[in-house]
Amino acid sequence: MQLRQLQQEVDHWIKTIGVKYFSEATNTLVLTEEVGELARLMARVYGEQSFKRPEDAENADKAIQEELGDILFVVICLANQMGYDLTEIMKRNFDKKNIRDKDRHINNPKLRS
Image 1 (cartoon, rainbow, N blue to C red):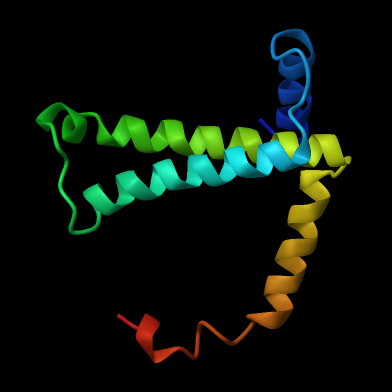
Image 2: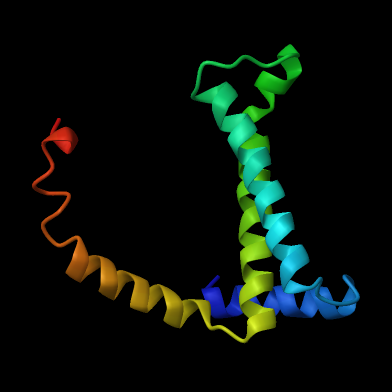
């Protein structure tokens, strides 16, 4: 599915099931909450923290995927309600990265294996 299609799907869901978009401020806070939930999982799967219950560790992969989905959903909501086209945003983002970072990472000794 393309970004534009995702934006349309989210918009349809919001208008038919979600009733209406939360305000931009509320969605920004929801995004922060979702990123925090992902961070908690990452600290336990890839960091030094441990899970409180064994079943949480067993379901960590699925939980990470769900949090990534939640984050993407809220980002799409924000783009929609502000009238932004994520496809165009990402094209410009890659253009910026290709200019700014053209030699940056290739010349970084920390990234050589």
